[in-house]
Length: 455
Image (cartoon, rainbow, N blue to C red; front, side):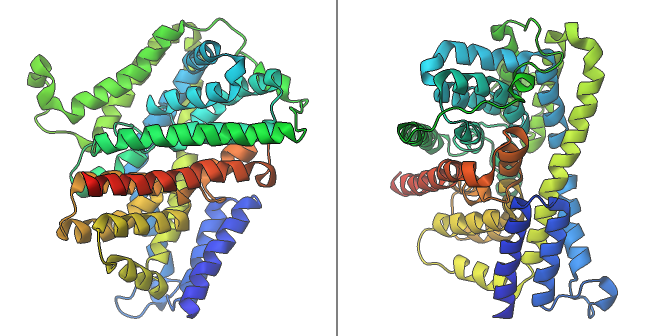
């Protein structure tokens, strides 16, 4: 009982501290220490009896393990995003989409621009920073409440694009190393679910905005808007948008080549005999970065700074995720967690249901889709595959499940987008974000499991 109270209380404290602005590198270990104290886990190795685990070693094993597995992907992803931004390619693509869709569909334009960049391999954090300057004038001209901008950005970035088949985001790649699948696992069901989530979420967002406008809410300008829309050095001619799509196409194309080297015809002779799994993303992001660099030759003086900013951003992003993975690593040692995991694994019926519940809960516990997968999959993958679950179906179920409760208030991307990028508060903006990034993916998850059961 004490362990259960400690685990729930630590999670509640982690969410509270994050919403209040406490750095996750402080909040994560502090919350994990509470779990250890209420679970009878020694805080330091010398205090642990025999081979018993301890808080410090377990936390750092989870922290450094995730760092070692995914640092290169975070690094290249962040550098690719920064090069796309500095070269003007990201802004060019986003503005082109906005221009094609038009002011009458301002919300759709913001969602569409975010979705294209995300599925093209740009880090979700970079997408938020790239699209927000375009969202502000769109919402102002359409006279829409700006508190819905975070919801539009998050919906386009971390729902139907992030966890869909073929996505180069790591939330779609982590299951591969545990299940022996590829990034396109379960693509037929994934396509249906992605279309469902996109349509449902967009209609819901539009209705929320329309309801707010009907109540008298309007766009409220801020003194900082001019700086956001016209930052220093950004008011310049941009490369042609069609050319700017090439880095995104290169990421997806090279990613597919290294996923399916045997299907590349004459290229098969020079490609590796086997799929490179998650390492294919390194080759893909490298190719995309080179093309983005060529597009940004006029900005070559700024490129060293872009690489530096990207590297720094990668370290910040991955360490924030590592902090919650470390919390999750300690949480898994709690008797309350083990009891809950045992209950989930003993659920009767379809193994996909048990896997979905386990990943959803752990992703919510850690506030991270990638962190939740990294903790859950080593524990549940062998169990459910041993029960006869199809690895491809399990891959897609786990990916979609990880993108639901991960978007609780303490999620790093949610906090960054609402507060740092958009300058909003959780009180004003999180309600819409939760509906679109928690409820909609949960509906998509249920539909995916049902479709796998039918077909």
